[in-house]
Length: 495
Image 1 (cartoon, rainbow, N blue to C red):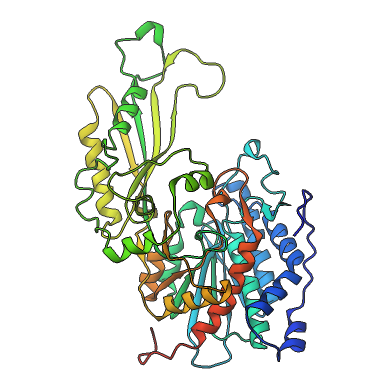
Image 2: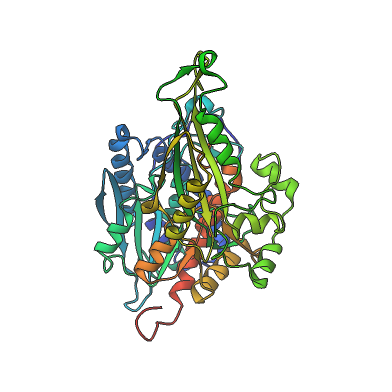
């Protein structure tokens, strides 16, 4: 494919029904689906580009109308595929819910989860393009949300088209429910309430969670776990107001010094997290999981190059993949104090503030980790300053592990078919998401289908998606609906 530096147009005309009508008798294998998607390459990019141009930043109130526009865009795209649609207000955002019935009355029901809101962007840090002016370069489409997660949903739109082509029917092999929320980048504050109020509406046999990374282009690996998350904000108050350092230096408490000190002691020398009792509930990595992670073609230098992270650090005694996907972590995400911008005033600031989050693993629970955070700072804080600690328990997320059942086996078969060979192994998702919440409330297993790569720069400048990954994921999704549709009905009506 040739590369270009020009924005992609917004013409979205396409007609899958024509393919169904003319090609239904042909072979429905991967090669044919590849050809179909390649033929529609420009249309796929045009659609994704049109959607990326909508700055659906739910965390910024001034973009509430853009979040609504994004939801309406998606609803229209799903209607073109025969999906019945409804828009649901969740706080100031809008979720998209759609249904498409299967041809068979006893077909399993699949709920597809993702999100259409995006992270805010700093245009001054973007080099390839402005955040909401998508461009194609060297097989990558750049723009905020191109990968996280509008590209993930685009793979589903075209995966469904490819599945319809393969089966010769607009009715899929499984009942499909789409639940695409508009607040994920804010921590999904209204999502649990939405699920709890209408569990029957979202009832399903399996959940396909599409907000994850893949391993490498051409080397698929099944994501089978997702870490949880607990976030907190620490504010330290020293002087009652900013004071001239030349007047009080050496005698006044400095909240920056205190902040740096207590943050530095959050980790021990071996990289372990120093919260009291933190590892009491952490489940040790099983031999089977260690072997799964070791099977991936991972080396530190290649990982550093792919992620632009300069070096490898973390908890001693564990491999890099184990630290990344199977062990907990704590990261300080922001520190604010003094005069970080503008002309310095040579003052000791009255306040210093830091935000951090903890990624949790099986065995740990949000409530317990929140108490451990509180206990640490109550003990670590010196006299002479005041502090406030806000732990966001309400938006915390529990870790999740996909059960090794027939649904996961169906995904492995679909990935094998789409890639023309066996998967490379099994991996985890280092970030978080409402996977455990979905599985618990809807009482269904969660399997992960992602299109992103570590190189995609989620949440950072110059976010992009590798278009070949999007197309390959669309083929996997097309095969997945066929594979899940062939599973025998559960005797009790639910898997």
